[in-house]
Image (tube, helix red, strand yellow):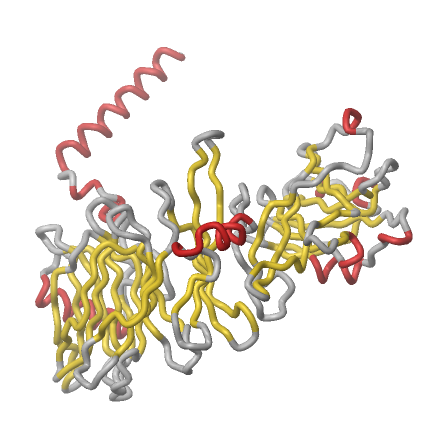
Length: 465
């Protein structure tokens, strides 16, 4: 019987291989071609029909990989006539990626612009009036053939068509942000490839010609193996907008990676500055840069919800206990959060960032001390129990008294299905998708006690499950 089943399996595999090798070309084997698109209805059906009448029936729609617009059909009022135009990306019969704009003229969708993109895929599309001419510009970030480098194009609506008013090769990312705080978005370009000197450019209209030009730029660190991990836009201090650029380099001594942050903003003289790194002041500024170093993938964010972005760094600390050999659970690293003040970084908060289970817990102010030299002394430390998926918070002293613990359970876990006593002392903090977060409070130390209300205030889920 077993041999017979093996024969059937082999026949099935052989049939599968022969079927695809005979009926599909290499380009047809792509995932996008194997997945059948949902049937279009309404205006999308009419747009698709009009597009195929000029582009052919065998086109493959392309989806931008990031940004706010993830559909191959982007509807937007480009020419400010109170009616949407349709922006569509697709592959043609020759495997070229194309960009087409259709407008509804005399109640019929008509192609008003078409061009071949300078890449093989679409990373992102942005739409904004950066020229300030009462029309919206289309900004497209194309992916180059090597899959790493990008190419940028900006298109402006002119006389029932589009004109490319800006081109740029070899960039990392592009986004819109009011960096100079003038109530108008600028085009921000991050150049962090190995082909050029890493920098950030701020691009906007500077005259009445309608052309875009680079008017500000500032250099970034240029490690040979660096790459951009995350870009955060927000305030560095009240009234000053900034770009927080989290990057990563390889530590060849340890074979690990190191994360660091640079902060870009305009100063009072309207000069674009890198607050963390300055090539002309290596020693002085790199001391500040060193305060942003961390080994974990933890990125800048507004940790205390005061509308100011904080910069993280890893905390090196020693246990206030001699019982190190008796501790079976893993000691978790703590994260220090810092605000940029008076030309440097000053400590504001301390937290545990549980990357494995996807949540953050910010320490209350009475759980740590900061001395005059900006050194943090944690009065509470955290241990992780892998088996129970639980963080246990204990006093950082000889006694190691337990204060509270946070655990995560899947709804399908037996411990959750069986209403036994294992969760009797736990309170539900939050639930998301198929996961439930619980807390148990011990409060054995009166000086460090915490309420359920405060725990809910300091607890947050940090990624989608």
